Length: 241
Image (cartoon, rainbow, N blue to C red; front, side):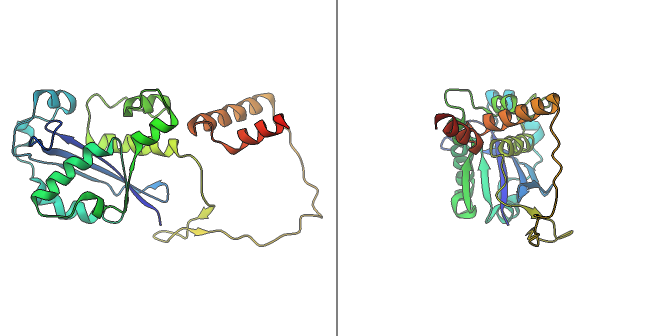
């Protein structure tokens, strides 16, 4: 089972070393490339004032956060949820720096020992789209992910957008699977061998409109993969032969 968590935070400022704290955490779970709905969302009392610049970004005022739990109150639930998962974060160094500062205050192990691994989607995007803006908003526009509700940053909203962006950045399927039923693990489907020699196969030619739609889909997939699709390489090899 492949379990991934898309993770985002909002903070009082930019520097955990200067005492800035986490005020919101959003987590979205995906298992075997399917969003499960088993998400986590916390607002936190940072026990210090927000910076004015930070409030302009996330809109979470000191008054709103005053009655929210402190990080220590949710730490066990959050750690249990994250443990053993691959965690995908956009600009991972920022969020991990804040998480490790919070965990150190409680004498807990660092984030890298809780997660099975960390993927920085910003690094991925820079490799796929070099020289372009690769903010979450820019990726949503480029990959046609609807972010029209993102007037302000929000950890759970941004984690959900990141999940959609990641799925489109990593299009493809490693194996054919079928569901074993509610609560069951997915299993690889094995089909019985069939001799097709006696069958007359009907060939249906696509209409021009269908062919154009198919080519557009292939071009979209090729663009999303950064020009790494197999069929394009085979076409180029055939043309060069």
